[in-house]
Image 1 (tube, one colour):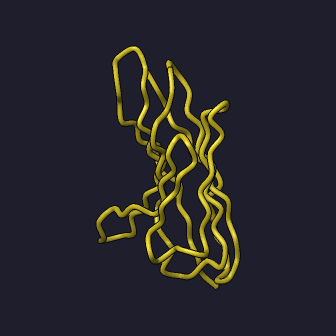
Image 2 (image 1 turned 120 degrees about the vertical axis):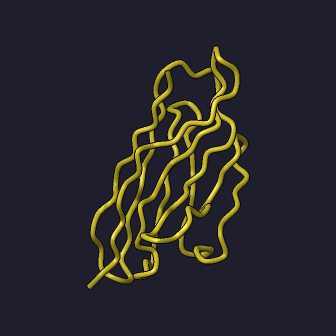
Image 3 (image 1 turned 90 degrees about the vertical axis):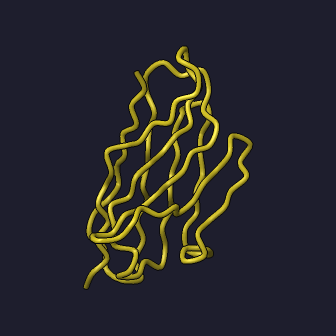
Length: 119
């Protein structure tokens, strides 16, 4: 069984920064795409950023230039550096990984970490 554990959420003032981390553990042969999603109260979950195994990235228009996604393939981790945070970034942030293990390809979600941007 594969688990994703997120950390780094919290309360930050507008204009501030936070760094989210997500670590995968369990039976893992390799991980393809790793992504961060977020879901605000009353809204649908949306893709924030994605990174392929080779390091190619893409971002939601709303976070381009402010957020940076990175990964460490050796450690099976993905990080989201969030700068210039705005109140509208307030959401629960979820990590997702496309994992290859003895069961084939499995999509795995983290439990979510709350980010609140408020003065």
